[in-house]
Image (tube, rainbow, N blue to C red; front, side):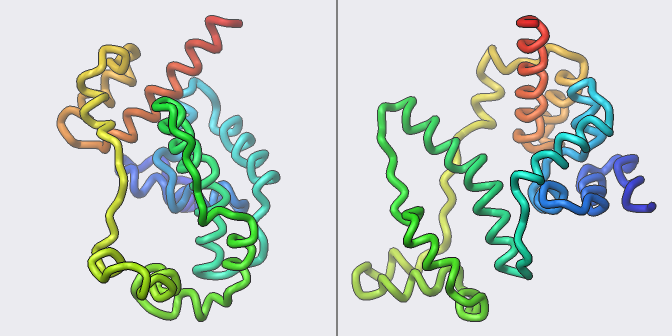
Length: 208
């Protein structure tokens, strides 16, 4: 009962904990990586709480998480939700925009199947990330490559959102979020998600 009421809290980090009441893969995944809670999504889309919950439940029927535990379960969510729906989409869009044919050697089918068969106690034995992969290439690569700090690859979305005329707010909700974004009270991703949802909704209504 308490968890189902968390979306009334002003802090978005607390709101997101309300996903814990959903006993399916979408809820479990969004509890880790969700940007908005269900009620906030419903408000942005002009939909009801039940409508958004129903869609998440339908998605979960496609992504039925097997009986895994701990690290293996997190790996499954990252592979099936985040990598497929976010990372690979971004890589393909950016690559095609610049006429590049991007290759992902570590996503080879046989490689993925072999990796999935490695026992979790061995894969996650050491604190160093991807230690098995590092050990496999220690002799082939210089130490400054495999022993350096993990380096992310990000795009300058924050700057683009501030400079691009097409990403300026239109609705009152967008303007509210944009002010918070400008003041660095929220991350750029929260404003971007709201922007994309509203633009899709407006285009959908205009085409109807």
